[in-house]
Structure formats: C-alpha cells, structure tokens
Image (cartoon, rainbow, N blue to C red):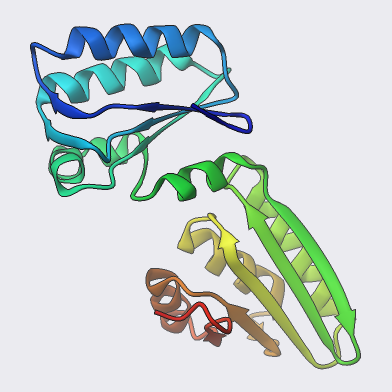
Length: 209
C-alpha cells in the first residue's frame, strides 16, 4: 500500500522462525522498489519473535541512505519485544501508522503575523536539519515580535528534546530568558519536557486528551 511517497508493508499474525522467510522476501521486494520511505506496520501482528526483529534490523541495513525505514508497533504483541530488546533505540518506531506517514514528510515552518502576536506553525517530520530550521524561524519571530509568539508543533514529529532546544536557543539571549513564548502542543511527553524547561505551553483547542 502506498500513502504518497510512503510504501507501507503490513505484517500480520505470528512472526517466528517459520514465517520470517516470507517477511524477508516481502521486505526485499519492497526495498527493491526504492521508495523514499518504507514503513513496516506490525500492528496486526500477534507474536513477534527475535527472528522477526533480526529481519527488521537486516532490512534497515539494506535500505541504506536511499530509503528511510520505520516500523509501526501499534499492538502490545509488537511493541513489547521491540521495547524490551532495545530495538526501538536502533530503529525509528512509531505507535501509529499516521505518525509514521507524517514523519516521512519534510518539516515545513510557516509564520503568520497578526498585530502583537506571531504564530509559527511547524508541520511534518524530523528530517536532518529540521531542528535548526525551526530555531532560525523562531529566532526571527523573537526579533520581530513585541508581544507573544505562539509556536504550534502539534502536527510536527520533532523529538521533544529538539523542540525544547529550538525554543531555548531562539528565546534566550545572554543567558536570560526573553519570555513571550507559548507552545501549542497536545503531546503529554512534550508538555512535561517544556514544563521542566520552564517554557509555557497550552493545548490547542479540540486536541486535548
């Protein structure tokens, strides 16, 4: 299945020694197509053995630099072995397919000026240089704004540490916090990271949970 530039390969049922050859063959065929992004959706998987994890790691190596490789572990049966073995530190792993597809898109930062407020909206994925691009846009907004800068990252998949780093870099000068920043975000982990860094945040209307 294709979703834009993303090729999605769905694996269902039990993935063990008897079924990994089929998975390997399917992955080889998908990689041969050289899609910009290949996502393996393990959400329908009911059992994931170490042999299956090895196949995923091998596929990641085969994609090289020409194809981004990601895994969706939307079920306990798929997420638990990936997390317990530390594979989630070696591969890009998402809990939802929509997040994996969104992460494949290049990040876009838009700025809208309205009276004393500037809205900076970041959407898309965490490609190389994305954090630097966000920092630069925020720095420009901080120089222009005489009121409040609203930063909407609710549709951006940058890691929390990068969002926090970008905000701090843009709104701190000579070691002093310039203030005037509010981050719009509905992700609980990012909210905690922002609060720990002393950065004000709020949930966009209709997106709280």
